[in-house]
Amino acid sequence: MHTILVVDDDPTVAEVVTGYLERAGFSVDRAADGPEALRLAAVRPPALVVLDLMLPGMDGLEVCRRLRAAAPVPVIMLTARGDEDDRILGLEIGADDYVTKPFSPRELVLRVESVLRRQGGDQRRVTGVAEPGLHRAGITLDPAGRRATKDGRPLALTLREFDLLAHLMRHPGLAIGRETLMHDVWGWEFGDLSTVTVHVRRLRGKIEDDPARPRLIRTVWGVGYRFDVPSDDDASDGDASADQGEGPASEPGSVPVASAAVVPAPAHAPASESPPASPPVSASVATSFDGSRARRA
Image (cartoon, rainbow, N blue to C red; front, side):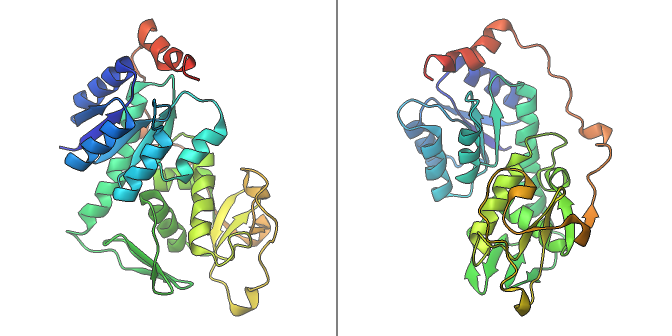
Protein backbone atom coordinates (compact mmCIF):
# COMPACT_ATOMS: atom_id res chain seq x y z
CA MET A 1 0.00 0.00 0.00
CA HIS A 2 1.36 3.40 -0.99
CA THR A 3 1.79 6.01 1.73
CA ILE A 4 0.83 9.59 0.84
CA LEU A 5 2.05 12.50 2.96
CA VAL A 6 -0.54 15.32 3.09
CA VAL A 7 0.89 18.65 4.24
CA ASP A 8 -1.70 21.38 4.90
CA ASP A 9 -2.25 23.62 7.92
CA ASP A 10 -6.01 23.82 7.26
CA PRO A 11 -7.50 20.86 9.17
CA THR A 12 -10.68 20.81 7.06
CA VAL A 13 -8.78 20.56 3.77
CA ALA A 14 -6.38 17.97 5.21
CA GLU A 15 -9.27 15.88 6.55
CA VAL A 16 -11.20 15.90 3.26
CA VAL A 17 -8.10 15.08 1.18
CA THR A 18 -7.10 12.33 3.62
CA GLY A 19 -10.59 10.80 3.47
CA TYR A 20 -10.63 10.64 -0.32
CA LEU A 21 -7.12 9.18 -0.49
CA GLU A 22 -7.90 6.53 2.13
CA ARG A 23 -11.08 5.52 0.28
CA ALA A 24 -8.93 5.14 -2.85
CA GLY A 25 -6.77 2.61 -0.98
CA PHE A 26 -3.85 4.76 0.18
CA SER A 27 -2.28 5.03 3.62
CA VAL A 28 -2.02 8.68 4.66
CA ASP A 29 0.30 10.60 6.98
CA ARG A 30 -0.63 14.20 7.83
CA ALA A 31 1.50 17.20 8.74
CA ALA A 32 0.39 20.77 9.51
CA ASP A 33 3.71 22.52 8.84
CA GLY A 34 7.05 22.15 7.07
CA PRO A 35 9.24 20.84 9.91
CA GLU A 36 6.68 18.18 10.80
CA ALA A 37 6.44 17.16 7.14
CA LEU A 38 10.22 16.76 6.86
CA ARG A 39 10.30 14.72 10.08
CA LEU A 40 7.53 12.37 8.90
CA ALA A 41 9.15 11.97 5.48
CA ALA A 42 12.42 10.95 7.16
CA VAL A 43 10.72 8.42 9.47
CA ARG A 44 8.43 6.86 6.84
CA PRO A 45 9.40 7.91 3.31
CA PRO A 46 6.18 8.55 1.33
CA ALA A 47 5.45 7.40 -2.19
CA LEU A 48 4.11 10.89 -2.95
CA VAL A 49 3.59 14.21 -1.14
CA VAL A 50 0.51 16.44 -1.45
CA LEU A 51 1.95 19.78 -0.32
CA ASP A 52 0.21 23.09 0.38
CA LEU A 53 2.15 26.07 -0.99
CA MET A 54 1.06 28.56 1.69
CA LEU A 55 2.26 27.03 4.95
CA PRO A 56 3.05 29.08 8.06
CA GLY A 57 6.75 29.58 8.74
CA MET A 58 8.56 27.35 6.23
CA ASP A 59 6.50 27.68 3.05
CA GLY A 60 5.70 24.89 0.62
CA LEU A 61 8.40 25.90 -1.86
CA GLU A 62 11.14 25.47 0.75
CA VAL A 63 9.62 22.19 1.96
CA CYS A 64 9.58 20.94 -1.64
CA ARG A 65 13.25 21.91 -2.11
CA ARG A 66 14.28 20.01 1.02
CA LEU A 67 12.18 16.95 0.20
CA ARG A 68 13.60 16.73 -3.31
CA ALA A 69 17.16 17.24 -1.99
CA ALA A 70 16.70 14.22 0.28
CA ALA A 71 14.98 11.88 -2.20
CA PRO A 72 13.29 11.97 -5.65
CA VAL A 73 9.79 11.80 -4.14
CA PRO A 74 6.96 13.01 -6.41
CA VAL A 75 5.23 16.19 -5.19
CA ILE A 76 1.79 17.60 -6.04
CA MET A 77 1.38 21.16 -4.81
CA LEU A 78 -1.88 22.68 -3.56
CA THR A 79 -2.20 26.42 -4.01
CA ALA A 80 -4.88 29.05 -3.53
CA ARG A 81 -2.81 31.59 -5.39
CA GLY A 82 -4.00 32.72 -8.80
CA ASP A 83 -0.60 34.05 -9.82
CA GLU A 84 0.82 31.85 -12.56
CA ASP A 85 4.38 32.74 -11.50
CA ASP A 86 3.87 30.93 -8.19
CA ARG A 87 2.63 27.78 -9.90
CA ILE A 88 5.49 27.83 -12.40
CA LEU A 89 8.02 28.35 -9.61
CA GLY A 90 6.67 25.25 -7.88
CA LEU A 91 7.16 23.23 -11.06
CA GLU A 92 10.62 24.66 -11.61
CA ILE A 93 11.86 23.56 -8.19
CA GLY A 94 10.75 20.01 -8.87
CA ALA A 95 7.01 19.63 -8.17
CA ASP A 96 5.39 17.13 -10.54
CA ASP A 97 1.98 18.79 -10.63
CA TYR A 98 -0.15 21.40 -8.91
CA VAL A 99 -3.84 21.74 -8.10
CA THR A 100 -5.42 25.16 -7.51
CA LYS A 101 -7.91 25.64 -4.66
CA PRO A 102 -10.87 25.31 -4.62
CA PHE A 103 -10.47 21.88 -6.23
CA SER A 104 -12.29 18.61 -6.68
CA PRO A 105 -10.92 16.02 -4.21
CA ARG A 106 -11.62 13.29 -6.75
CA GLU A 107 -9.55 15.13 -9.37
CA LEU A 108 -6.70 15.29 -6.86
CA VAL A 109 -6.93 11.52 -6.34
CA LEU A 110 -6.76 11.02 -10.13
CA ARG A 111 -3.65 13.19 -10.28
CA VAL A 112 -2.04 11.18 -7.48
CA GLU A 113 -2.86 7.90 -9.22
CA SER A 114 -1.49 9.23 -12.52
CA VAL A 115 1.89 10.14 -11.01
CA LEU A 116 2.19 6.84 -9.15
CA ARG A 117 1.07 4.83 -12.18
CA ARG A 118 3.81 6.39 -14.29
CA GLN A 119 6.41 5.74 -11.62
CA GLY A 120 5.17 2.18 -10.97
CA GLY A 121 5.16 1.34 -14.66
CA ASP A 122 8.88 2.03 -14.85
CA GLN A 123 9.52 -0.16 -11.81
CA ARG A 124 7.42 -3.05 -13.17
CA ARG A 125 9.38 -3.04 -16.42
CA VAL A 126 12.47 -4.01 -14.44
CA THR A 127 10.96 -7.45 -13.75
CA GLY A 128 9.89 -7.94 -17.38
CA VAL A 129 11.67 -7.32 -20.65
CA ALA A 130 13.90 -4.32 -20.03
CA GLU A 131 13.52 -1.45 -22.44
CA PRO A 132 16.75 -0.87 -24.38
CA GLY A 133 18.75 2.20 -23.50
CA LEU A 134 18.50 5.36 -25.55
CA HIS A 135 21.65 6.95 -26.98
CA ARG A 136 21.43 10.23 -28.89
CA ALA A 137 23.51 13.42 -29.11
CA GLY A 138 25.81 12.34 -26.27
CA ILE A 139 22.86 11.58 -23.98
CA THR A 140 22.32 8.07 -22.62
CA LEU A 141 19.12 7.05 -20.84
CA ASP A 142 18.61 3.79 -18.98
CA PRO A 143 14.79 3.58 -18.52
CA ALA A 144 14.94 0.47 -16.33
CA GLY A 145 17.54 1.90 -13.96
CA ARG A 146 16.22 5.48 -14.24
CA ARG A 147 19.76 6.70 -14.98
CA ALA A 148 20.72 9.50 -17.34
CA THR A 149 24.11 10.80 -18.45
CA LYS A 150 25.44 13.32 -20.93
CA ASP A 151 28.96 12.79 -22.22
CA GLY A 152 29.47 10.38 -19.31
CA ARG A 153 28.35 12.87 -16.63
CA PRO A 154 25.24 12.05 -14.56
CA LEU A 155 22.13 14.16 -15.15
CA ALA A 156 19.97 14.97 -12.12
CA LEU A 157 16.50 14.62 -13.63
CA THR A 158 13.16 14.54 -11.86
CA LEU A 159 10.63 11.81 -12.61
CA ARG A 160 8.79 13.90 -15.20
CA GLU A 161 11.94 15.35 -16.73
CA PHE A 162 13.28 11.83 -17.31
CA ASP A 163 10.00 10.65 -18.86
CA LEU A 164 9.72 13.73 -21.06
CA LEU A 165 13.29 13.43 -22.34
CA ALA A 166 12.85 9.69 -22.98
CA HIS A 167 9.65 10.33 -24.97
CA LEU A 168 11.31 13.00 -27.12
CA MET A 169 14.39 10.83 -27.71
CA ARG A 170 12.20 7.90 -28.81
CA HIS A 171 10.81 10.13 -31.60
CA PRO A 172 13.77 12.10 -32.99
CA GLY A 173 12.94 14.52 -35.76
CA LEU A 174 9.20 14.54 -35.04
CA ALA A 175 7.39 17.66 -33.87
CA ILE A 176 5.15 16.66 -30.95
CA GLY A 177 2.36 18.89 -29.68
CA ARG A 178 2.17 19.91 -26.05
CA GLU A 179 -1.27 18.29 -25.78
CA THR A 180 0.23 15.02 -27.01
CA LEU A 181 3.11 15.28 -24.56
CA MET A 182 0.69 15.93 -21.71
CA HIS A 183 -1.28 12.82 -22.71
CA ASP A 184 1.68 10.51 -23.37
CA VAL A 185 4.07 11.64 -20.62
CA TRP A 186 1.76 12.87 -17.87
CA GLY A 187 -1.16 10.58 -18.65
CA TRP A 188 -3.59 13.51 -18.46
CA GLU A 189 -6.51 14.24 -20.73
CA PHE A 190 -6.72 17.77 -19.37
CA GLY A 191 -4.41 20.23 -17.60
CA ASP A 192 -2.37 23.42 -17.89
CA LEU A 193 -0.05 23.24 -20.91
CA SER A 194 2.43 25.53 -19.14
CA THR A 195 3.39 22.40 -17.18
CA VAL A 196 4.97 21.02 -20.37
CA THR A 197 6.61 24.36 -21.18
CA VAL A 198 8.24 24.60 -17.74
CA HIS A 199 9.59 21.04 -17.90
CA VAL A 200 11.05 21.65 -21.36
CA ARG A 201 12.74 24.79 -20.03
CA ARG A 202 14.22 22.83 -17.11
CA LEU A 203 15.41 20.05 -19.42
CA ARG A 204 17.14 22.54 -21.68
CA GLY A 205 18.95 23.92 -18.66
CA LYS A 206 20.31 20.45 -17.90
CA ILE A 207 21.11 18.99 -21.34
CA GLU A 208 21.85 21.93 -23.63
CA ASP A 209 25.35 23.41 -23.90
CA ASP A 210 23.68 26.82 -24.19
CA PRO A 211 20.02 26.75 -23.03
CA ALA A 212 19.42 30.14 -24.69
CA ARG A 213 20.44 28.60 -28.04
CA PRO A 214 19.03 25.05 -27.81
CA ARG A 215 20.15 22.54 -30.41
CA LEU A 216 18.56 19.37 -29.00
CA ILE A 217 15.02 20.28 -27.93
CA ARG A 218 13.75 22.66 -30.59
CA THR A 219 10.50 24.60 -30.54
CA VAL A 220 8.29 24.11 -33.61
CA TRP A 221 6.06 27.13 -34.23
CA GLY A 222 2.41 26.47 -33.58
CA VAL A 223 2.99 22.80 -32.74
CA GLY A 224 5.25 22.00 -29.81
CA TYR A 225 8.74 20.49 -29.56
CA ARG A 226 11.15 18.31 -31.53
CA PHE A 227 14.28 16.41 -30.47
CA ASP A 228 17.09 16.94 -32.97
CA VAL A 229 20.42 15.16 -33.28
CA PRO A 230 22.59 18.03 -34.50
CA SER A 231 25.54 17.68 -36.82
CA ASP A 232 28.76 19.61 -36.33
CA ASP A 233 27.56 22.12 -38.93
CA ASP A 234 24.60 23.04 -36.73
CA ALA A 235 26.69 24.65 -33.99
CA SER A 236 25.68 28.17 -34.98
CA ASP A 237 22.10 27.31 -35.91
CA GLY A 238 20.47 27.93 -32.52
CA ASP A 239 18.13 30.83 -31.98
CA ALA A 240 19.88 33.34 -29.68
CA SER A 241 16.66 35.00 -28.51
CA ALA A 242 15.65 34.54 -24.86
CA ASP A 243 12.31 33.18 -23.69
CA GLN A 244 9.64 35.81 -24.09
CA GLY A 245 6.59 33.86 -22.96
CA GLU A 246 4.97 30.53 -22.40
CA GLY A 247 3.81 29.87 -25.95
CA PRO A 248 5.97 27.62 -28.13
CA ALA A 249 6.50 30.25 -30.83
CA SER A 250 8.21 32.64 -28.42
CA GLU A 251 10.81 30.23 -27.04
CA PRO A 252 14.46 29.79 -28.06
CA GLY A 253 15.34 27.13 -30.59
CA SER A 254 12.21 27.74 -32.67
CA VAL A 255 11.99 26.22 -36.15
CA PRO A 256 9.32 26.57 -38.85
CA VAL A 257 6.49 24.06 -38.63
CA ALA A 258 6.80 23.24 -42.31
CA SER A 259 10.14 21.56 -41.68
CA ALA A 260 8.82 18.97 -39.27
CA ALA A 261 6.64 15.89 -39.27
CA VAL A 262 3.89 16.28 -36.72
CA VAL A 263 2.56 13.82 -34.18
CA PRO A 264 -1.04 14.95 -33.60
CA ALA A 265 -2.73 14.96 -30.23
CA PRO A 266 -5.22 12.14 -29.64
CA ALA A 267 -8.57 13.04 -31.13
CA HIS A 268 -10.54 11.53 -28.29
CA ALA A 269 -9.52 10.41 -24.84
CA PRO A 270 -10.47 6.83 -24.00
CA ALA A 271 -13.78 6.78 -22.23
CA SER A 272 -12.31 4.81 -19.34
CA GLU A 273 -9.80 7.57 -18.63
CA SER A 274 -12.30 10.41 -18.50
CA PRO A 275 -12.36 11.81 -14.96
CA PRO A 276 -15.61 10.94 -13.19
CA ALA A 277 -17.72 13.79 -11.96
CA SER A 278 -16.97 14.66 -8.35
CA PRO A 279 -19.84 14.65 -5.89
CA PRO A 280 -20.88 18.11 -4.71
CA VAL A 281 -18.61 19.50 -2.03
CA SER A 282 -20.47 21.11 0.85
CA ALA A 283 -20.47 24.89 1.02
CA SER A 284 -18.49 24.83 4.26
CA VAL A 285 -15.72 22.73 2.72
CA ALA A 286 -15.66 24.76 -0.49
CA THR A 287 -15.35 27.94 1.57
CA SER A 288 -12.50 26.42 3.54
CA PHE A 289 -10.63 25.41 0.39
CA ASP A 290 -10.10 29.01 -0.68
CA GLY A 291 -11.55 31.23 2.01
CA SER A 292 -9.13 30.08 4.66
CA ARG A 293 -6.22 31.12 2.46
CA ALA A 294 -7.63 34.61 1.88
CA ARG A 295 -6.86 35.55 5.46
CA ARG A 296 -3.18 34.65 5.04
CA ALA A 297 -2.70 36.05 1.52
